[in-house]
Amino acid sequence: MCGIFGYWDRQRRAMPDGALPAMAQKLVHRGPDDEGIWHQPERGVAIGNRRLSIIDIGGGHQPFVSDDGRVAVVQNGEIFNYVELAAELRAQGVELRTHSDTEVILRLYEREGISFLSKLNGMFAIAIDDAREDAMYLVRDRIGVKPLYFADDGTRAIFASEIKAMLPWTGTDTGFDGIDLEAIHHYLTFNYIPAPWTIWRGIRHVMPGTWMKFTRSGVETQRWWDLSAQREQDFEFGEWAEEFMSILDDATRIRLRADVPWGAFLSGGVDSSTIVGLMARHVKEPVKTFCIGFADPRFDESAFAAEAARRFGCEHTSEIAELNMLDRWPHVLYHLDQPHGDASFMPTLRVSELAAKHVKVVLTGDGGDELFAGYEKYEEFFGRPDAQTLDTASFQRSYFDSISLFAPANKNALYRPEVAARLQGIDSFDAAAKPWFDEAAHFDRLNQALYLDMQLLLSGNNLVKPDRMGMAVSIEARTPFLDWRMMEFAFRSRGATKMQGGDKKHWYKKAVAPLIGQDLAYRKKQMFTVPVGEWFRSTSHEWLKQTLHGSDLLRRLFRTEAIDAMLSAHRAGTANYTRELRALAALALWEANGPTQ
Image (cartoon, rainbow, N blue to C red):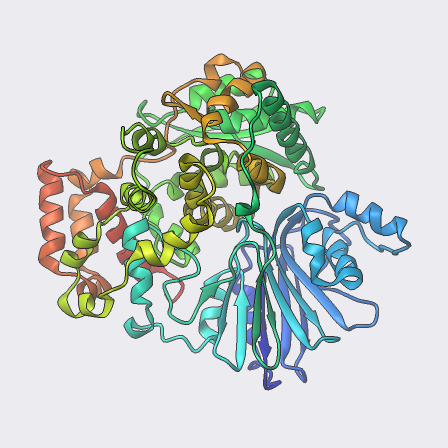
């Protein structure tokens, strides 16, 4: 786990003195252990790394450079099958001088070019400077576990793992005119800004499963992995369960490879309990597990976590945390670089802080809900009598509407007239959702909904959470459910294996019940969150009102009277605007605490 950064100048101009060290310093939380920069100012290119040392502590310094000095590589993340890949290379006569997974990337690229990516099983963002081709590659892992941003003005491209590292050097106007209004339009729909947009007009994501090749003449983009290539097939339960458990067990096993202490986040839910149960199969020492609980029983899962920890003989650490974490929100948004309206980032930061006292790596259950239909919203939508009978266009729009925060009419009513005029004709469904729906049209309808959430919700919000909150305290989060083999298997599995009669994760829970026990497998899902909406009605109402009224950005975007109407109705209890007010508060707090502050 690291932070990477660098630039590619088509006119062979070097960046200003001090720019690269400044970029590195902004990423020091992602990699407090080491720093390395490969800079060729005469070519106008640099790639750099801040390292969190996990594998081959002494030998894994980055960048890795070829023997002839013509190829250099940095990466953020881990290649979990590096042991097997290294053995293959040695069998072919390739000398490996370290036990680092980054050296494996270099040697594979030297032999096979960019096509080597299909061999990698991991989470990664990679930069490769290839002087032989006079080109630079940026690569992102299959589903976007690791972040990577770039800005390209046509003459110079700058990239980094976090926006804050690149923002001062991109020429981006960090005032109101530099903000991407379309991105905010989509933010009000999704509660996060979906890729490729960012809050800034000139900065974009490298898309998951994609590589970009920067040359003197321009940039080439190619998608190297496509989840929609899967085709659903029929399984008998026994066959399905055997393949499911085999893949997940091996995905967990290879994610235990580390030369530093490791553990797991354990809530006592089916996902985290399953991962911890599989971890315990592969190690001799007790698995270190971490949980935070709350005094309010509605939000406290610590008893379930303790039950799972006892079942698997874990070394369990749990703390009761203060429920009201609003004072942590500015710090969260600084690390996010963009507004996110999801309140669960705050408790995720808190459990990350707890784990960081003991380990440098944690395994998590992220991805299980999106792959196997674990959220209540799937039961609610697909429990409707028309969910399967609507025509395709109506189904797509109806599901999109069910997951949207502000409906189009409500957004237009919120905007100031001049903002509404600039956004006229931009539809978040057409821009951000329909292309993914169209890719997934051959799947059944539940899988179409899951595919949309994999591409938007997972990479846009739910994977941002463990990455940024873990990296804020310099720990690495690994996600066995997002092994590429499991993702492809999940989309070969028909929707009926995932939900039947309102039973979410239908075959999944049946398959893991012998491992984790019936009680944990079938307990009611609790969301890992805090009751922000209650605070907005009571103890934090005045704070919220001052936060919203004190924001210059909100005043320039939105009608004050529309915000006040939501505040009044929410406090009076005549309407529940928790999510809407939370999103607006996050936007205001981001303005005050984001990367420009």
